[in-house]
Length: 107
Picture 1 (cartoon, rainbow, N blue to C red):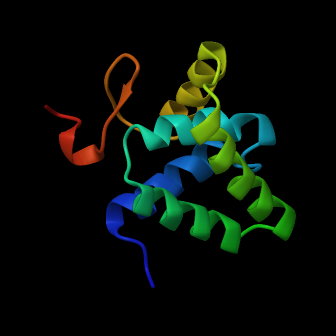
Picture 2 (cartoon, rainbow, N blue to C red; picture 1 turned 60 degrees about the vertical axis):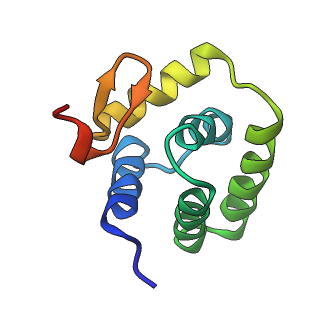
Picture 3 (cartoon, rainbow, N blue to C red; picture 1 turned 30 degrees about the horizontal axis):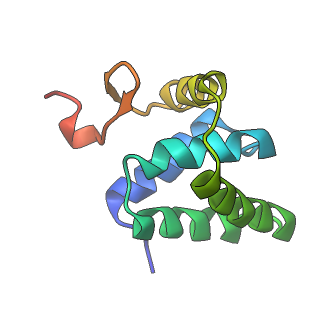
């Protein structure tokens, strides 16, 4: 089933920010950032899409990171690094430290 347009955009931003793939060290801050902006269903859809296009090791790494992201707080420096990568990939920021969907970026 195709992803809704906004979630497809998230995948595009992730691929633009991480053209070589998301490194394991960025999964926890990435899902912490996404988890503050997206629903669990959205994150599951993104995870399924990333896992479907990667190797099985990557898929397991994503699943493990989601568990870790719900159990551990990422370091601020890690969140800042991931935020910068997402921003470079086109993810719109409304205010410092807060991500927002495209349709709200002009607010």
